[in-house]
Image (tube, rainbow, N blue to C red; front, side):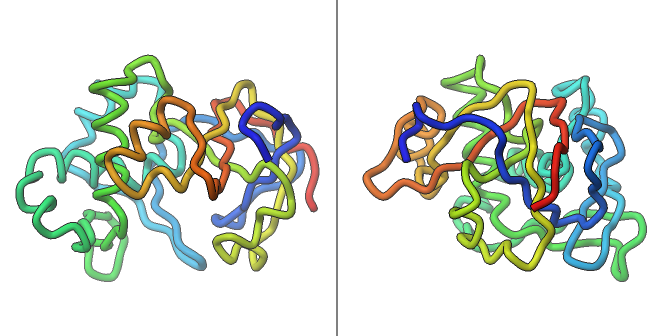
Length: 197
């Protein structure tokens, strides 16, 4: 499948488990970090910075990784030397008032590159994601979740395989595609939930 031949509807995985046909995905300041059967409210000391940088709010993906972005930005030397270390993320209602967020370093790098080299592109922290077709859904073992057909206001098709290193991330934001691509739909809000699969 080519980047240029993809159009809606797309297939969004409901990892949160609370979507219904007719719902709309949008940006919000209800900063909830969710897992398979639980969710927590983000209690980050960086909330004011988040509001300043993203005045319209964050997506669910953004709520999960925003604290990591600012925490890694302030302690980048440590995290760049320890790339596999999860980011401790404060929550107001977790068992230990902290959740460990994996892959924060990749989201930090992607956002840094976007800000520095592609400031006109929409942040992943303000985006929702979907699969371009139903055949791609099993890539992350997403078949165990409900899948909804969605229609975004606007979208970009990106190759998520390019998110694995700095050079690839430059290509990701430039809209390039690797030989063995794994395409994702980066959706801009609002996004209408039109059907369940």
